[in-house]
Length: 103
Image 1 (cartoon, one colour):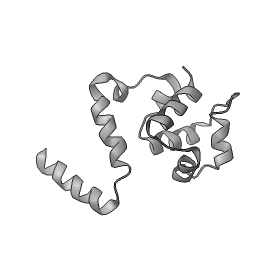
Image 2: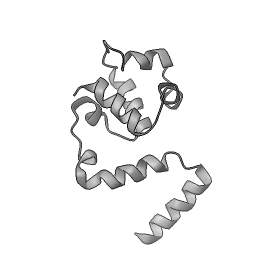
Image 3: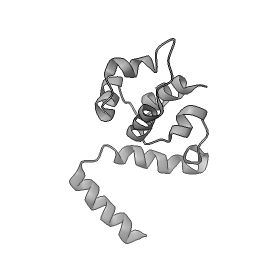
Image 4: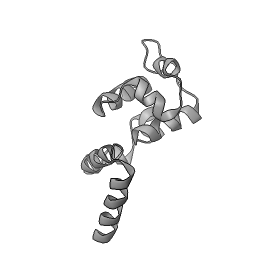
């Protein structure tokens, strides 16, 4: 699997459309489409970082497919992180306090 395949897979997994990802990253939608097109180009490092951060994954994972956060042991944690990305700030702050009190 290559960058294009992992990016498409992650976007599908998170149910994120390219326009939404473009808005999250500040990358133009047309440019983002070039990374998932039939003849994709590899994004520059700074763009790959923006994409990875917006999806809550590492650049290493998107480029190589290897990352400790994508091991089976962390699958549940990754799912929670993905959900947290969609929680409004006031509720996120409350969740953060609850988590810190549990730890």
